[in-house]
Image (cartoon, rainbow, N blue to C red; front, side, top):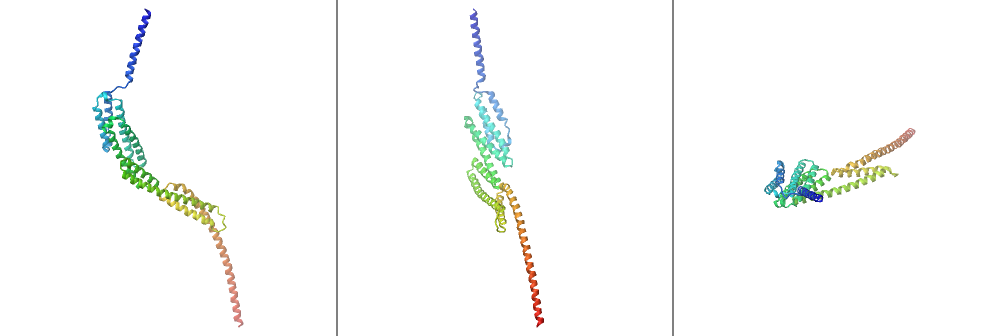
Length: 325
């Protein structure tokens, strides 16, 4: 009897464990669909109140409306975790779009660069959205791409204008390339090609001038070294070298100023050194010239005095001869 009771208790225990396992399994497995999930997703979609964004980008408003209509038309059992995933991607894209356009409203180019980086992330999200059958069938990713292309075209125009008004050639080239890329992503190949041509042309001229400037700087440093270490017996050799150093530096400086290049700040130290050596050699040269002039004046004075004495003696001789006659 005792063994039968134990067997019955064990059977009941096993049955309870099986029931608990089934209940737990029911909680952990995803349901096929849910009216509650449908209502939650509709609330999230409807709550996206972005009037200004939707006015500027009607494609986004249409994508939102289409998504809302799709979800409303689906039976609750069809609204699954997969539905939630692609709707969340859409909501994230629209939120990122709002942040991107806010950045692009600033006049600083750095904010627009940040907006373009945001656009790259949005483009990746659109690619992710295309993997879901329902939004792809409804053309929702296509609407988002159209809005993104319009944004890229605006950025292409912005960087085209700012490039035209930028004095620093290095930045100008960067803006021209950015404009070209933006136009290309915005579906404007002719404008993209034109801006790329301008960027390559400016880059070629800039590189040529910078190479020439470096040559002038190297020549200037060589002449400066010779001026500071001149052992020539020829008077003025060191001064001639510092003049050449000065001329070479001025030619380099003109090229840097032409392109408003920041490298000019780095080489200005050399200009200070050249000017210091120039002033010192100028003073040395003036001292030598002054001594030469003093010596020349003394010699001239002595010769003049001798000439005047000779001239006086000659006058006395002629006067004596006249008296004798």
